[in-house]
Length: 280
Ligand code: ATR
Image (cartoon, rainbow, N blue to C red):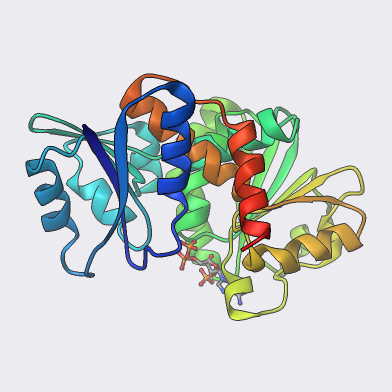
């Protein structure tokens, strides 16, 4: 049977096996998919052992996404821009690397939330791995602007510089700022995306509510308890809020499509996963 897995550290929390096995069931595909805990210094050895045992592909989660990009023998332009890879596909000696995180976010926002990214103004908070994974695919949707605001300005500058060519090609105003820059404090945005990890440290929300718009959307890339403070803050200020669970399911669907050549249905899987998590 074709075998897939997700590599991570930690990995116990991963919902990927549940999601991928639901996709397999719904599309009539026969495969197995498991969680693989990997020691911090054993990522490439573990992937190569999995390949040698006949594995067809894998997902990669924290903290190995950068190492996965380095391990790939070929990769998509998205991996090159994000400098991170969450999906590997094995074919003989070839290891193809893709990053489906940003594709998943775009599909969730446009397809599931019905949000029009084209020509809108976006504030992306954070400039770490999560922000890097989504910036390229967001730019490719041709919004009017994506302003990246980060506590450490230099990281936002580096991230936007890496994407400058794509931003110019798509005609997007893409700029970097500190979180408290006057330009951020004096404007509101159609879409505010929280790609920072401030909520994991119970830190204050990194921007004032003036960035939100009443008819806009606020989206945290996390899900579960970690996303609650941001969503409550947005809703208390009259803005619709969304967590990262839809992105999780949609990035998994893009991985499944890459491996199996079949697009799985996602909306029922997302609803079932949300119900499962609310009861756990
Ligand atoms: P991830 O892979 O989840 O993006 P990361 O690469 O460590 O993790 O990035 C974390 C992001 O959250 C960074 O943008 C970080 O800001 P810095 O670049 O200044 O470190 C941001 N972040 C973390 N804690 C924060 C806080 N308390 N306030 C504002 N931003 C915070």
